Image (cartoon, rainbow, N blue to C red; front, side):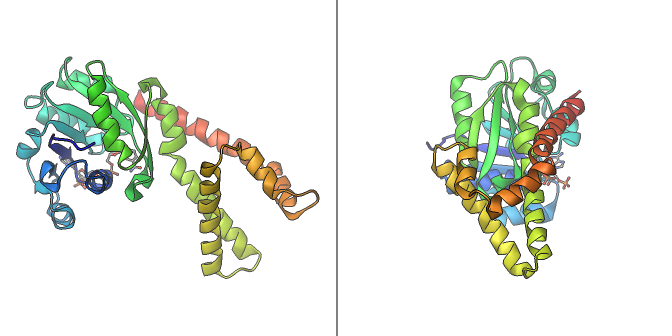
Length: 269
Ligand SMILES: NC(=O)c1ccc[n+]([C@@H]2O[C@H](COP(=O)([O-])OP(=O)(O)OC[C@H]3O[C@@H](n4cnc5c(N)ncnc54)[C@H](OP(=O)(O)O)[C@@H]3O)[C@@H](O)[C@H]2O)c1
């Protein structure tokens, strides 16, 4: 699906760049249809040189876009919304990726009839392998949701979910990359502990996680069945798994997701 609309980004940081890359790679729009406003000249230059998109230091050209992506940090969202509230109307489809900023606070600023979609993406979006959950506000149509889903499918997988689920999404897939990187780091350290050289330990650990994930996603098997495939009676794997169980590995992961979800709820208050 290619889009006829212009897409404007308020904030040209890491997540905005991931989206721009995916949108261009997926040929959803041309570079000429993308506008970015960012206060930092060096940042604007990188975006202009890399993607040949329109960049500016002021809101002007971005405000003329049909789709506006709010890609600034949550702390500056209030200021940005105050600056734009007189210019934006319900003709604009507003997509916010700011973590923890509820639909109601954006709708409260921009007016009751504004069309807002809130999205929780994650950092693998940078390599177009993100996981995003999208929640639509009261005035969002099915067509709006289809446009937003198309945009976020260009940077990975996009799921439409109720806003009430977004704290849990934050705990699972928003914070999730950090859990996976901790696991990767621990695998590498384990390799070092048993005497493997660092470079080889890193390669083997990375490929093991990547390959296991590709295997899991290529089959309908439950993870427990895939685990059973590697675990022979009295063998090496069951010896390792027993230690993970003693350390509370799976409970630790579940607790981490629960704690991150609760923290997201607290921050959103
Ligand atoms: N990174 C993640 O894992 C992740 C996951 C989910 C959601 N998000 C959300 O994505 C949003 C963007 O995150 P990010 O990691 O891309 O942040 P970022 O790299 O800091 O990007 C934000 C950009 O917006 C610029 N900016 C600041 N004030 C502005 C203004 N008034 N008008 C226009 N641009 C302005 C910033 O410039 P300065 O550097 O000068 O401030 C910066 O270049 C955040 O709201 C975050 O919560 C991030």
